Length: 318
Length: 225
Image 1 (tube, rainbow over the protein chains, first blue to last red):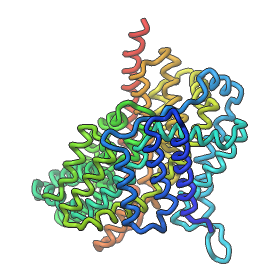
Image 2 (image 1 turned 30 degrees about the horizontal axis):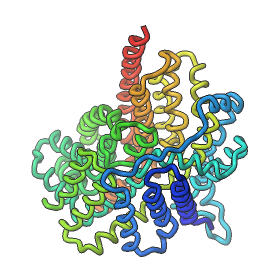
Image 3 (image 1 turned 90 degrees about the vertical axis):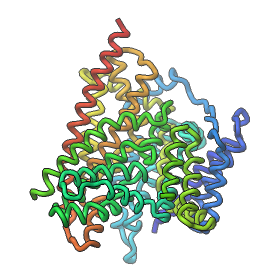
Image 4 (image 1 turned 120 degrees about the vertical axis):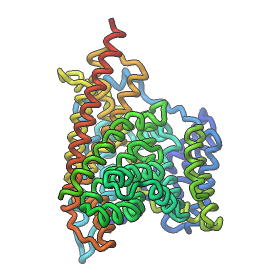
């Protein structure tokens, strides 16, 4: 049986390799701090399942402190020049796309099959883990194909991996930290406070007003929490069910579906949804950390207005 | 109200562009203290949630492959291909990707895409190349604008496609929540109501991508002459 933990160990080994490469590079500034950062991140992946939460928590806080007030500087990792890349592209042609497309295709094929292969009644991969295990597997397959196609050594792939990883930088761990912040928000009862404020300002008897308050509330709450899934139970228990469904007789399926999608409008507009908005900006090496959000905001706002009208027109008719 | 201090710290810290990792950690600690948690549980909560969400870090496993292919000229090849397609514009390339991403996500194939796997190595270079083929070398700011839109299209496509698929987390969350409150519904009954919004966002974003094309034309053909 292939466990998800194997994929985490693989990622832990990759981050540890980054730490070693950062440390070995003598021209690197802050090489000791960078090695410590990626080393700790690697440890949380390698031993996350066995370390007590308190120990991991201490490691995470130490890792954050290593980055300091102004964040670590970007490492300068050399690669081949544009001339060489062009001639390589000319020589290899469309075969270059094969390993790139193997990642989504093998992930997809694995998702369909791996949890159905059974021996002695136990699935090869547990159903809940199948997507992530397939992703891990697809990376191994694609890496082998890329190494073969390009006639490179495995260590070259680590070098190129480091080039991209340090271009992303310490923001790479931000999504997980924000998830931790979300958990602390939940533990401290932030949700109830926000729902209370929204409840306080809505005109209870005006159907359109309640619809607007629910949809905007979903978007605002998602902007704060960075996650529509966290906003949905709070806002729906506070406004959606008691006011829209029970008081005004709205269709719960429509209220729920469009309510959730109103939350997604918020996701488009918030740096708190770091894995969707901040990480791509880093990955594309945009100078403005909020560049992706700025490209999405007009669509998010217009769609939120459309959602309010859709819910108002559909939920009380079907 | 004091429990909202974490939100305030995040807003101010992000606005002042302090190291985001530090901002989020301080906000978490402050929220925990304001909510009456003891220091050991605050640190433990950090560790527990960080470990539980390790799946978010698995996307980085693709970087060695993508980096290797970039070294082999993947971006350049994607650009060569697009520059040969007559009639290709930045907006049209992105619109085609939006349609594909939304359609595949709506039948559950959310893994056929992604920022590291598709946008950085293929979609962003293609969107850039389409503009380059028309207007020549692009200014840095324009390149960044096009890249930001490429990332946006991937997000919008997957967000507003996946909710039409029955077995998706969001549909199951809505179903589960309503069930707890005494309303029993089939996933299909919920998922169909994601379709109007999915169509609306496609129209809205298609218009915005057309406007992006016009903006590029205005900016870049002016500079050339």
